[in-house]
Image (cartoon, rainbow, N blue to C red; front, side):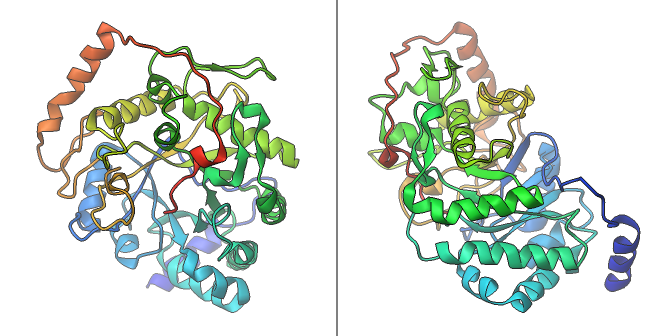
Length: 390
């Protein structure tokens, strides 16, 4: 029965459409569904949680079949992931790529709305363990998708951390690192041919954590501040996320791909951290994520690309108690493991929480006004923008 349904789907809905590229994102707001934990809700319960929150766009970091089955018939749109550890095999074998797509994508269409495949995550800019396999894996997966006549439905992408940039302030000065360019340029060329966006994991939280002496936390949290000016473009930035996105646009323009769209595939703020992560508090996380939702709801672009509406996936649904690294890595969730909210930004959890009443407190605080702006001296080095690999 499943194969018959897939046949009908291919016959009636997947006829090639000239001059159109697939769009994996509906609206402007999405969320990442990380599962490095042993105490979080089941995929079926996650579906209930997301539908109640009216969050339609979801990214996962693998193609877990229990998740894909739970999402079937829900209307939620999901981007699955090919993990970094699979890149070598998929790059080396077109047959391996085809089998992976058949087993993890084709088998679940059309009932599960798989809208994209993310090939690896933050592969470039760190170690070179997987860098040489990324383009081959991207091409083999795309060719498999294309042969199955799914290329008008399933978008192929890969997400980058800010470690791919040599510098990022002022935004107009941003370029790709010399040791990244050899991998990035052919990747961008292929993505420009198939209409894929540049996917960026952008964390004002990390930028502030590494350079709190020079970054006003209000600027990082979308709160009133002096902001920052780009001396070359004469553009003014009132928040750090916009500046990070425009830095990516500048690097793309420098590389010759000024028409490529940037989509933020991860952004968020930790609600708890280690002693050296003093900004990782529930109040700051609530402020960032509440203001991020407001920013995205405006459906507007950035100062450098005002016509390109900003789209972002927040990181993440849950706190993940088994994530390695700093304490902050475990505490990016909008929801606790039991489905109650970590803090109130307008969503309702599956269970009541003391955080449910905190949104009104945030609104009251904002109404009274925010003070204590600092002058911004944003000379952010590459080291201050390293993003932990996920």
